[in-house]
Amino acid sequence: MDSTQLYQEIILDHNKKPRNWGKVEGCTHKSEGLNPLCGDHIWVTLKVVDDAIENVAFEGKSCAICKASASMMTTAVKGKKLAEADALVQEFREMATGKLDVGQGTHHLGRLTVFAGVKDLPARVKCAILPWHTLHAAFAQEATISTEGANDPFANA
Ligand code: ZN
Image: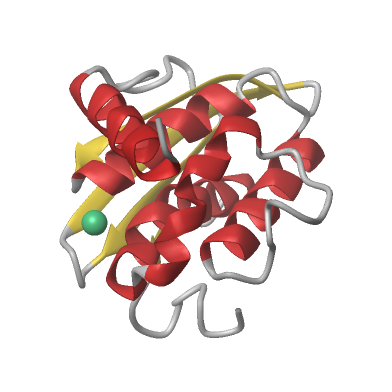
């Protein structure tokens, strides 16, 4: 199976059966993410205990790439320390924007490297990154982020 097939299989699987779908009961952090270009609109909720992510969930309306990225993200960061999860946000963002060559540098992305191909699909980059920016905003207790407008996290990317 080549990387394109693997990518499609994983997207389809997570789209059909998103992991950690819904809201975390008694969440300590939450944020809303918007990508007006595509229409992606998601919420990420998490419960942080002793600087570690005890539980994380997402829900909303989004395209398949955004949903699969969010689903894999929640799986990847659950149980991690906030600093480790934030480092992963940074790595994912660098991979999706082509700044990190996952075949070369050291990183902790694991299976998330199936999203490395989005760097060649400019219209999809924001779809893939939106859940990660929303998670980062939740850490910082920001209520809403958008990929467009004044609080565009890409503005200083
Ligand atoms: Zn999208």
